Image (cartoon, rainbow, N blue to C red; front, side, top):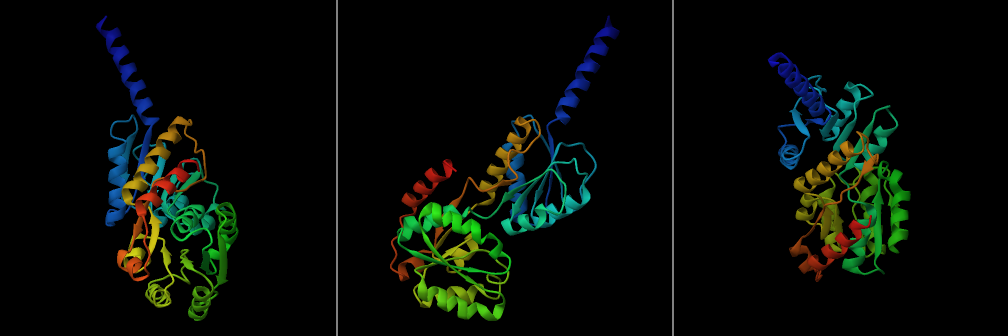
Length: 301
């Protein structure tokens, strides 16, 4: 009888272990980057009360052990390394991925891969402008060689929000200042769209200064850019990114280990304002009201 009971408990343990393996994830991240650490720790905390086991790895190459059902990468380099060093059958969810990077990588592999885009949806950014500056505001946008690929998406978002947008293509660094001067002369607001040719460590300060001197508000794409002199903007904090990721991970297992989308855009986001710049431009931005409106719109996306 004792032998039968032993066999029963061994079988039960084996079943439990198999079930546990069916809901296990590996998070691959750079432990030397504070941002990545915060995201990873928040995901771990969010999943602490769930049946999903979490393992972590801070090496760039994909580990073999322990077993897991989903690899979560934090940052573009970790996503690229995972795409290059895992079996095609390994599902990957990549966080902190710029949309331009996702576009470049999507057609270069046969992976089961979903990305959580770091960029805010263009419709949301244009809605911010509409709520702050009015629906008649003319929006200038500088596009470089990379960001030109998403021009159609921005046009679609502009159509949906009924906002007038004007584009200027910047093919190289020499064209930046003349293009910027023309853009801020013809438009009411400058919407910054990430592009390495247009917005980089050598150009950002000059863009902000020239726009400020011409009393043209800049809509930034990161907290640091707003702090540096952009008037206002949208971004997601590490905690908000982790909350979105947690929801996608849970949904992955609910969907029988399948992603319901190839690309996820931020659901949780923050609005910030550079009060000094806003005061200088004599802008009275009611962030609380704008935030409420954008969050209502985000729930319907």
